[in-house]
Length: 345
Image (cartoon, rainbow, N blue to C red):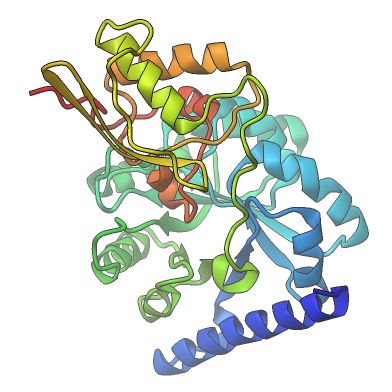
């Protein structure tokens, strides 16, 4: 596709999404400009983002601080009117970079993060707008404050940490209707005097607008399908090999001998059921991207997470990511909470 054709294609996709937002606003009796469209550019490179900018989009969202740091400073030099939102989980050791890079952070969800944000905002003299993430489905694998703890946490952000919170964000459980979760988030916001609601993605933003969303996070409807992970580099572990060796290690077979794993799919995800001797181990929707750290450390981290029950079986849905992939380093740093991967009768 030529550059002109790509810009035209993206412009059409963007216009279609904006048209759907406008229609949803009319249906809800709202002005179209009451909703901010966040174009979610996670996993897309500069060459894919530039046509979206050329089509007139100025608000973008990213999931990971390191990825955003690698591509947005140069883009913002060329396009200084860009507004950048962090919509993914924020690790405390990434707060310094996040405060400098992002205009808005949607995932404030714990006291340690509030404390670190206060410190870095004071140091940088720059205060991104803040949204508190609400875990409306009480999903253990997701970040977010539980609904019954939201009021107290919001009060603590204001009084103990001196943070100005503008709104709430939620990501409904994948398998449930989103409307009740949007309604609950809006209710919590209203009783705490918050006007901003970050709710709705490509598949459900029209419903979110009906419940008061002021920010919708749309990726694939604008950019198209996300790029598949690159093939494993020399020395890296694909999902199938990690599954086999981890299961072997956890069950006492250092070499993984006798462990049968299902095939790795073309996008480097492994939907795996593995068996070892008389014991059955189930791993559902396991997904793995090559990690930037040596595979030996990755493997040790994964074994530890599996053995201690902190690795959730549906990694790809962490934080509501539309793509089913993450890195082992992310899992380690986020100290994932969730059900144990191992199911041994």
